[in-house]
Every structure is written in structure tokens, then in C-alpha cells.
Image 1 (cartoon, rainbow, N blue to C red):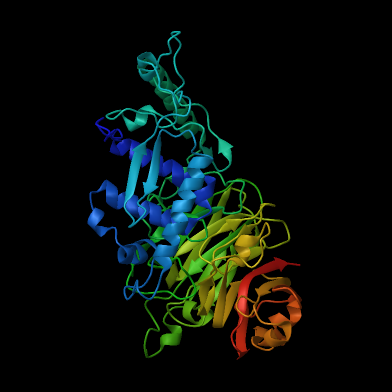
Image 2: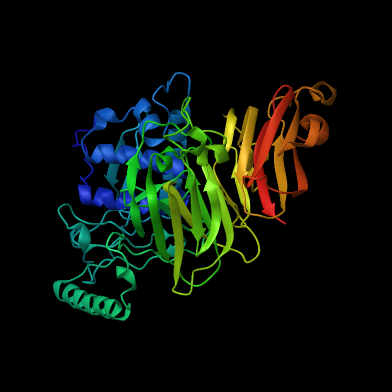
Length: 535
């Protein structure tokens, strides 16, 4: 006999609660380390919030969320389908761990990419059913039932609640709280008095230039990502492929903003970073706490040198000084990067704020250009180590080392494996690889470096050892000098599948880069990851 009971319709979730849940998920440790997945989730949810479900299509996700070119063809590139499968697994894992007690959950349709926000039964309620008193927030004994994160009724103000039990950067927040009117008033009074005191004691440092943004710089976090500012960017924050959060433009004086979103940039997945910038004579005066930092400057030439241009070699040359010391002289972006529309990065270690507590960057010469500034907690006397996975996601291993998503490359392509080469704690490192004829231009500060390559044979594994040898051989060069010639992974790995090769005593070229070339001899190279460490 068919069940005649009416179907249970999940309660609706208002948009404020939906946005709150999305913000908490994106801020979680799990998703902050998966920038590509975060971009997809943010994109599909924003389209859902605005009622544009018809735009949630594979092509739009690839182009608008992941930064693929407009000639992207879903039938030839499965990146959206692969990443969406990962996104579903990430959401499932999140709600099994950090988000287990959330009353609102985000789900992605099993087919397609449309998100759904579902209100679920709180875990504290008995599976056998709650009493009417319990459902109203009071137990039968008369005590208040603890509220769960995001357990906010439709129509409630977003400002009236704070998520609880959620991990922000590894710190578990306090219990959910609701501000009663008198408590809220007292809090605002205290906040206003504190703000007046801060302004009165600031000695006017924040008013040095009327054209400088007065938005405060957050304290540098105790992680490896630091603070990043995007020149000309107006969005409050933008998530980069490496896991960096790019803040909107601030602390500037002088110059003009440009937007050239029609220029695809080589050697980076973060196309958005190089689509806007600041030009002219300008400066940045950035407040910093005492300490040692590593400063990264990001450039890409998107105007000159795109075709035959008379006198192009002198069209853009400018100087850069850092805390009064000139660090770049007659700098030409396209000549330094190896061409126009190529991402270029300069790295400076052992940087400390000036005596006034600010980092002073001055760009002069009339045609200066800058796309981004990165400021990372540094190590005295040494550049920070750089670890790159030949894949689309940033990853933090069990000992806390940060492995960044693929960057600084030109040529070749990424191949993702259905099963990792090694089932170890670093299995994610061995889940995808770059193959073909490719190069890496690794920007480094002055010094001497060690390079470690993680290589493996991903294809020729079923044949006998004698039949595998010789099927994949290639050369590796650094700044034109051969590091190894005729490298045969299968032969070097013996009975295994992976090898590590370390090369020491490497110095950057005149452009401050380790230019690595992987040249095919037989078949094509298979690189899974690389590490660059200042000796």
C-alpha cells in the first residue's frame, strides 16, 4: 500500500543565511587551501543569489570563475567537471568535520552545477523527534536549548548572529550569540570610545595624503600567505589560485588606474591580477608591524611591445625604491619577463618597516606600472622556500609546509591521475603532473639555492622493467646550464615509480630568476612538483 503521508518539504533558508553560510565555508581551512574549488563555489552561489541559475553552465564557470580563455571548449577540456567532482567531495568532507553542527548546508546538484541551501536537523535533537517545547527553543525542563551555528529563522537580520564552532584559520570561534538591544547599544558606545582614542593617539599618520585609501591593513597572519594588495582592484577581496586573498587597492598616492581585461597573461593562472594596475608616478606607504618581511612586486606589460613599435625599448622604463633604497633601475617589464603579456615578479628579502613604521615604495619615471604587492612574514637572512605542485590546487602537508598551485610555467600541460602515484602523506603531490616541452621562470631574491624535483613515471608501469627503460628521457637546464641530460625516470626509479633529484649551488640570472627548461629527448618529461630553497 502506497504511503499516503504528505512529503516533508525542507524549510526554506533566507538569502542572508545563505550568504552567511557561504562566507563561513569559504573562510574555513579546508576551502582556503583549495582556491579553484572556492572560486567555483563562490561563482555558482552568487549566480544563485541573483536568480541567474541559467548562467550556471560549464562554459561560464570555466571562463568567469576559473579564468579560462573565451575559446574554451567543454568537449576538449574537462577541468570544470573534474573540479566540480572535487567540490562535491570537499563539501561532504566539510560537513562531516568543521561544519557537522551547521543547521544550513550547501549542496551541489549531482548533475549540473546548481547549488542548494538546505536546513538540516540539528545534531543535538533526538533522532526520535523533539517535543514542541524543544522545537521552540526550550526543553521540557524549562532550560534553553543551545543554538546551533546559522540556526537563524527566515527574516532574521544577518547582523544579529555570529557563526559558532567554525574554524577560521585554525581558531575555533565562540558559541553563537545574539545581541540584545541594550547589550548592542553598550557595545557600540564602547567601540566608539575606543575608535576616538585610537584616532586621537595616531599623531595624524593616517592623513599623510588625501588620495591614499584609509582602509586599515589587517595584522599579518601567522601563516605563509601574508598580505596581498591588488593595484586598481575595487573588489574588497579576491581569492587567488595560490590561496592568497588579494585586497582592494589602498595606501597609494599619485598615478592613475587602468583596466585591460582583454589581455591574456602567460605564466600564471591568476589572470585577474594583471588585468588592472596603477601607472604614472606614484607611491605606496604601507603600515607594518616590526619584523622581517619578504616583499613581492607583480608586473605584466599589457600596453607596449604587443607588435612592432618604433622605439619600443625605451617606451617604459622606470625606477623603484624601497624605504629610500633604489632596488630597480631603468626597469623594463617586457624585457625582464621575456615578452609582453607575461607575468613578471620581483622578490626582495630582509625587508623591515622604516623608523616611522611604514613600508615606503616609490615608483618614478613617468611610465611606472604595478599590478600587485605581496608582503609575507620573512626569515632573517633567507628567502622563503617555494614549493609548487604541478596541479590546480594549493595544499598544506601534515608538517605544515605550503605547496602552491602550479605557477611560473610556460608550455606543456597538466595531466590529472585517477589514483596518486604514492599513497603516502604527500599523495596529493603525486596526483597530477606537467608534461610536454615546458619551462619555469622562478623569481627569487639574491642568494644561492637548492632545487629539488619530484619526478615519477605515470604511464609505463605495467610492462617489465626492461621494457619501461628508455621510453621517457629528457634534459633539465637551469639558466642555460645542463643540470642533467638524458634523465630516464624508469631507469633511475629501478623497481619503483618515483624519484627525487636535488641540485645545489644555483644562482639566479640577471633578471632574478631560476629559468628551468625541461627538454624532451624521447617521449616527454613528467614533473610532479618542485622545491626551491635558499641555502
